[in-house]
Image (cartoon, rainbow, N blue to C red; front, side, top):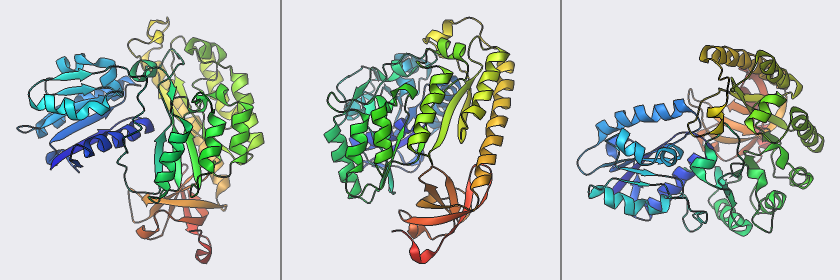
Length: 436
């Protein structure tokens, strides 16, 4: 049998796309390989959001080409493949094919051409492509990513996604619901809805609030998460649906990017600092126990020390529970590349270090106050180190618990006994009352 090995970099959308590619190739007789040594085909699913991610992939190509043998194929897929296209074939001679996110349906044909010695780049946009007829080949477990929207119509000046994933389009609500109903029969009880600006979802008749209610009504769906929303797409209807659909978890990841209005304007974000805080207040009023994480960029072109200070102060004003922080990365072809006043790398790095310190200290303070609380936690998988299992609460807290591996997929009431600052340790509260 033919074997396929896929390495995945980047966001949850790429994880879902890797599962999709495995599904496409399974229909053509492929089986998953655990290592590149065992594979007839090696694919690297790439991210193009930051330059260092692309450089990692170029380096990895050099490593993987050592695993090539007669008749085997090395391919680059995903956002970096879409952005660079045929250039990748020129830059990395060992690469046999390059495929963007809308070309995965054609993988069997493209692989056949590669075997015949024909190197190809498939980067055509297909606005109709949702891969509805192709079941994803997912890793076993109690959770699943479900793509509900592809592409993006926003034009943030720092972002390459509109170029790599094309215009926004949403799946039909009944197709999403049907997929999730089928997942429930495999033992999945938590789903994460994926989209570039997921809460702008609209299939022509139904908005994101309708989708949340419909998914929440699927028998067996216990938890709903979604990522990544856009601040001003949290309409009153969407917030009401979140608050009144019991399965919707009390957590939102809401990228802010900057706390300075002047920087937000240069980023072409469609809100101000004040509007962002207003949206947070609306979410917290509707769901008092909600936790909030965010994305923040330090060192955006033209950022002054005063503007950076506004971002640091927003961390406190917004009371974020956690934040993913990044140093601005120039992306060729984005409007931000042409902005004046690019911040020196050492200055941006120093600002990022300060921002990380503020975020970590705040997260630790928040989590220390949580010690002693009892939460419902879903046992997800073994921890990466040690013999404990990793569980997740509705508010997206990670907690290490001492339960057998057979408990994966079960819901347990867990008391937080300690925290490392980001992750909790916990004990099972009243095992006889475990929620199954």
